[in-house]
Length: 380
Image (cartoon, rainbow, N blue to C red; front, side):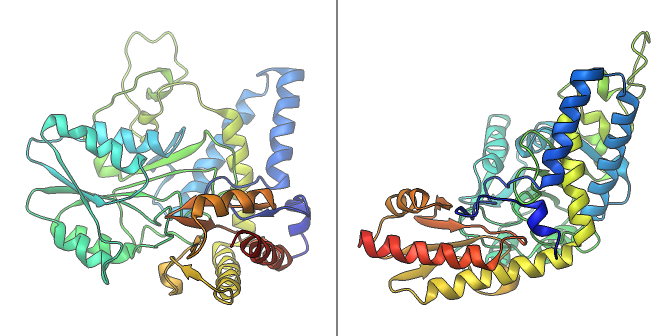
């Protein structure tokens, strides 16, 4: 893959293993942003019609990314939290309804459901990550009152990857809606709505998809679009958005109805460019290369004394995250020392979360393991 060094010309002294927080941009994305800025400086919005073509291409790429039926199912939003809030505040809840979720999930995928308590809606956060069968425990928690299962594809701290086909099948069987926060898996492993028929899929683009912050998407199953009560209003969500002098209006029939105002054209251009790279390489290739990189780090860490790997060792139970603890060094202290040594990582689950990507060279992984070894020796 000769193009990779050109697409990712990172500082050679840096071990960037933090894609679960924010992914560096490929060269093509950075160049797209620079070109867009130059065009704005020289021509303003003269070429806006061509920008709309990029927006259309982005919806099409996102449709292919998750194997949705139609670009009309895709809304372009700011981030995952906005998408989750659109679902949370839009559904026609009834007092006594229940939501089942994962305890210790990322806060955004808990807060939006917790606030519904003032409407008499119960949010049951099930602590299942220590269970021998987390999916079974979640399914068992679904009751006659459960209206929706709200999950993340991958747990942000431990890296546990949920069995989505199993959970989706259970939701279909029990007549329960499924909301999926996919930000920790999209761009790391394939996602296929044909295998995992979810009602809502939400993600930002700034982690594994290697795009800037501030641009994401919401997939909403077509049959549910009219059932989500609109909470935001503006010109862009109308059926005829550019008919500014119309005396009447109605919401767009497509998922664009969830896009209230002026789009983030800079973010749209950038995310479209990043997705073009994933389409060229192929998600199967991305997933295999990333799995190899995670396995390489796993083997290297297990060779060190006093290391405990938190992330499951089965490949089907992990995506791009590998979290470990050292029995003699506190996680926060170890994190500070590793960051100072140029190993860019995150403190999670009382330890260290490593998150390489498919393009990360093995030489960088070897350098990271060597620096981890040195830091541990200095801080014991």
